[in-house]
Amino acid sequence: MAEPTDCELWRCVETTLRNVLIPAVGDEWARTTAIHLVGLAGHAATRPDDRTAERAVELSRVMDALAENPLVVSEWPIVSSEPAQVLAAVSRVLVAAVGDDSASGDAIREQLRTVVIRQVDDDLAVTGRLIPFFRGQLDS
Image 1 (spheres, rainbow, N blue to C red):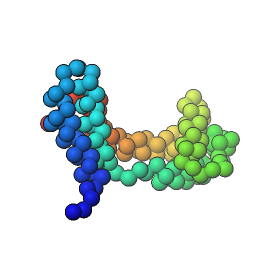
Image 2: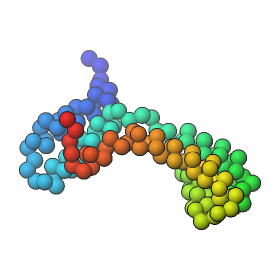
Image 3: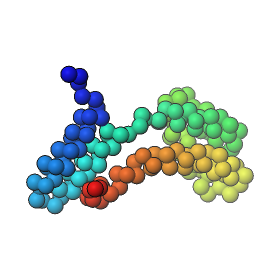
Image 4: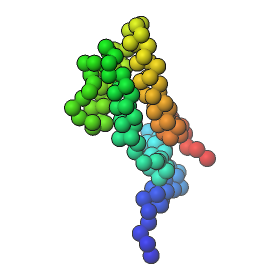
């Protein structure tokens, strides 16, 4: 008999929480916490691969294209291509653009902010289903 897959293991955890633990828990906070765990187990079983590195590459390309922008010059290029470093530089550039009404700020909002929003929306499409669980609500 083959070993269970990660997905099968997480489904087992989710089912056990739903059918055994939650019905037996009387304490409201402990029950809500168990419902949180049901959501996390379901997410763990179905979540896609981490796209952080791929997204950092996409953001790096946008930053490369904006390298001459006065709001980008002091932040880019960076020494490391590690996603955390890329995301930190992108964040600083976005913050600098918030109060900048010039063409430089407009370019950041049009090019960089648009990509960041799309990437966040992509994440929310996957993780948004967790919201009811964190409100203590089981799905059907």
